[in-house]
Image 1 (cartoon, rainbow, N blue to C red):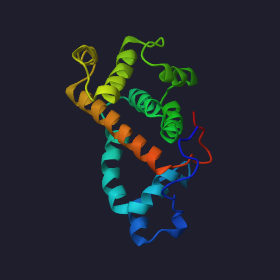
Image 2: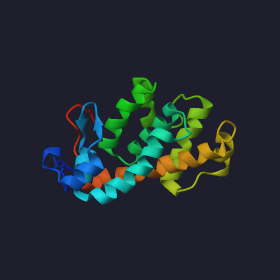
Image 3: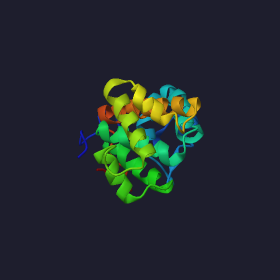
Length: 182
């Protein structure tokens, strides 16, 4: 269930955007529509413009394999109880190869019948969320297959989606019509 049933910050419809909002956010369509996160960010287009540079790296230019990136994002979204984030990334996760059964296991955590690598990946997300630190044991396990750049991208991915989850929950961004929550 969404933490807030009404937005604290309105999702501005793109028909009502000024030129600055249009310039910052006009290309932000998913599944043919501007989604509520971007409609909400239109309230602060300067922040949106700068944040989207970083967000674009994490989502589209990261060195993490897309499936593994989505496991980390979904785990953070679940831990933060960010229903909007969860719903959006279930769709993206399935597009990059996650099964419905795997998505459900992300809720359970690292002990839910994963490969060793996926289990450690989820454990890293748990550690970053809980203590803002990946333990030596988890780090060493991930370094068996991850480069330094991938380790950096993993930390920044978890941090980015922890931040986004905080914003979505606090602003009360509501689910888009085509997205299911938890």
